[in-house]
Image (cartoon, rainbow, N blue to C red; front, side):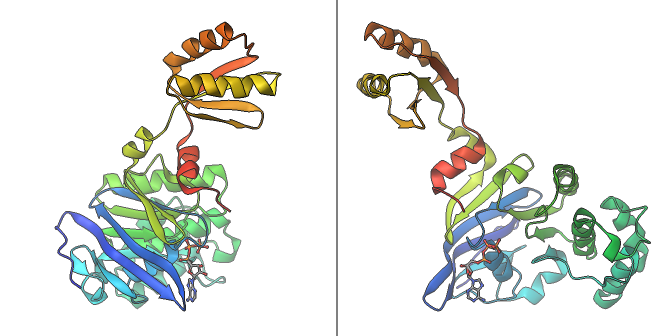
Length: 307
Ligand code: ATP
């Protein structure tokens, strides 16, 4: 049951599993998060992100498997929780109290210094709104106050469940910058999102979940390498596209017709060669464009449709 994590790992899980009734919410998950990095935890709604985070925080017990947080086993959360800050399933605050008062209540309850409240408010961009009542806050401000609360213990590891959910692009950008800054200062950030595009640019590594299973765990850079360059060809005659696919296939390039256009795997340099082969075969193409799919498209290609 024990996992021997090296001290440079903030999180390590091995075959982590949670079964509810006859359904696995998380099934044999394996991944590692190095200290001082941002790890994006990505998957559609219901894929098991919250369940995994709850197990990592010792809120629920795994059905099977094991894990370590900051080198300590997850079945002994008392050994690491003081060094972990978390915002999971939306922060709970008193609506009638100000942001600063809410943080003071939490600091008092947790035994943390009250002196850091104003600094934390400034850290999350609420420096001049700390005295406003929580109920007057926008969703983005509420999320940022939640992050400030998670930072109260001055944690080595920050675990955030969907902190960008429901935010507008400017709000998402602010959270992204804050998380990146925290990581640059040495805090490890484990952040979930159902949208890869919201966190890919700040994530050193990614763990991707689909139906409770880890379908990718590794460096963001390695996922970028999986992006397959594609050539999109259009013709007014659907028969021409079928012929074009056959020509490409004979040349060792696979393809399919999607929405009236041929999508053929191949690098940009190969596009003129394909064009010449099409021309020689009497096919007139209306359009021929090399494209590189986004990381999001690469992800969906790997995971199938998301809801
Ligand atoms: P969301 O973003 O919607 O919270 P998620 O990726 O965090 O999605 P989980 O909340 O971990 O997903 O849920 C994973 C699966 O486990 C879902 O099918 C959910 O219905 C189920 N589940 C979660 N908690 C329980 C529970 N206490 N009892 C039964 N089933 C549960």
